[in-house]
Image 1: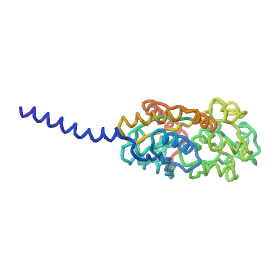
Image 2 (image 1 turned 120 degrees about the horizontal axis):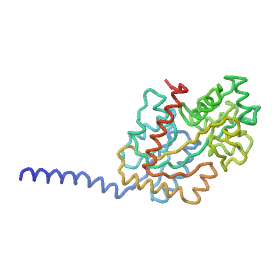
Image 3 (image 1 turned 30 degrees about the vertical axis):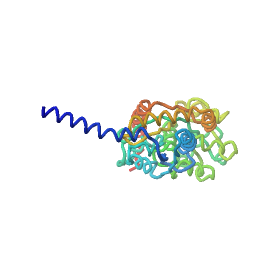
Image 4 (image 1 turned 90 degrees about the horizontal axis):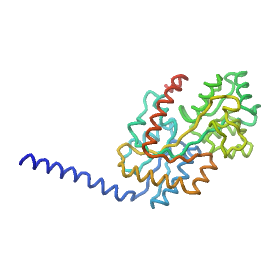
Length: 324
């Protein structure tokens, strides 16, 4: 009898502890949601947030506030998101450095597979290789030839160690057997400005932020990093077909929340962001910026993060891409 009473009391306490959480989930969201972008404004991660944030805000009736928390190749903002309360009011949009940073730095204050709930792979995009108009090349083959004739003389802009431009550039060096030197900037936006100004001669840029500068003639596009041409850059071949067979780099953009965020909230956010991405206006804006809508399930997003960790561990080891 005593045991039965203890079991009943234990069950009652468990129900009592769950009820506040269920009540909180039921009224979610009842205030603004902070969407951390761990890079400066102007890059493709920021573009995803600026397009989707307002669309989701209109749908849920609460503001989605974009918070650019840049620094240390995205580590600052990513770590900040990991430390937040898992209540659905702090989210993170991130890209490749989320998984490459722990492979390149000896101490990173987050674990990509243990500290986050993956909500959705929102979109993906190739980058494209471009040069300042002063660089005397018009094709990828010509650039490889120039780089081999002048080893170490050409440079490209990185957005920080392990960021998309850095990975794209080192993959190019690896396959082409060139020595094009990376110059690190504080983000994709500053790296793009460096290429436009001629501070660096080469850029591996996200299409969303840089296509306008190609159209205006301030950059000369040589090739896209995917295996297929993109509509946003008509007439620009792939790098693989323009001089470097086998080259491919496509960036993905993930929406995540701190580990422990209730499943109901993760499911609701997945649903809301996927609805926002399927809206005709959003689709047009994504296509214009060279972004391919994905809108995966949470399970698919988690599997992508795990597979990307394994893939980049191989490249980073082969290239000796250590930050310390």
